[in-house]
Image (cartoon, rainbow, N blue to C red):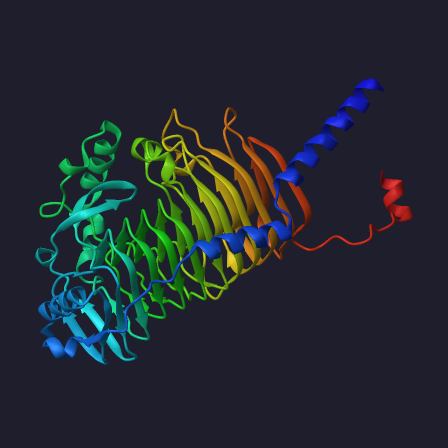
Length: 460
């Protein structure tokens, strides 16, 4: 009796500790409020110029690179302001590099269409799949800038489908080289790619920057990731629309970035909708003070490969993530996907997901510490994951997957109010501790148990 009593006490203490680790609704709202208070919208001076005044022509033929550069220089001289891009199609043979205190405003009907010729894009400091290096400039780029915005109802077009996309089949050698440089600690200044290499640039990227607003624009046809915030802080992304279906066309990638609001975004892209990252392997672990954290995503429409993703490059850590009130409006392979492997290290913790509506997916919720089955020696710590009120019409694979390692278990996961209408497989749960299910239904909900008939009893 004494042993049973001790076991019961231990279970009660364990359950209490899990529940107490989870923020209650009031505390979550307070945490979200604190993040929003820290996010500053860019302060843009009232001065405005039009690219037309600097010789730009929206005729789809003229090269407007010099016009955009001159407009940016004029704004810088005045201490900041807005660059207006009127309706029309503006071909730009090369990148647009931001300075501080600038809003690039694309009026309705305006389209910036970038050249697909690599020779127009100089080398800049960037990262590629979690490793810092020098590569072709992203098409819109800013490094060490603040108070910057891209707004308006226009379109940013990477024109990559028939050009840069072909590099996907050529990138493996450089991909492996960048990882080798990461693992061996090669100085960043010596990690030179660009001509003769095949790492595709991002469409839009800000690095080491703060007070960023990107609002309402449509993003199309990116060479690689669509919108990449690297080592940034105080970011607002709202009202964006996507039509980007090339290889690795992630919608939004946040890397080593904190204090972010993403809302009312309509995703339609060829890879992850939102991917939260924090560096790769040795380099990522050496930047543990740059964890991606304090990120809010709400009221978004999901369509693409995966909806909400953490990883796989997350070696500096990811924490304090709030995803809520989102739903799919088209195909998704996985709705919620957290992925890492023993090359990464780092951690994922304090993740809150609630009010998600999914249609037909392969997997509704998938946590894995064995992504691609590769790596050794640096297991990640995954803990404090809370999923509340998720519905899905069907899982053609497995509704819920949670898999850690024997010596590095996934811990303290709570799923509440989960309803999956139909699933090929219900659950795969292995190498975990303290996983709690409350009000979880996979398949048809069971009702009152039927009584056995006389014939059934006689057969027993």
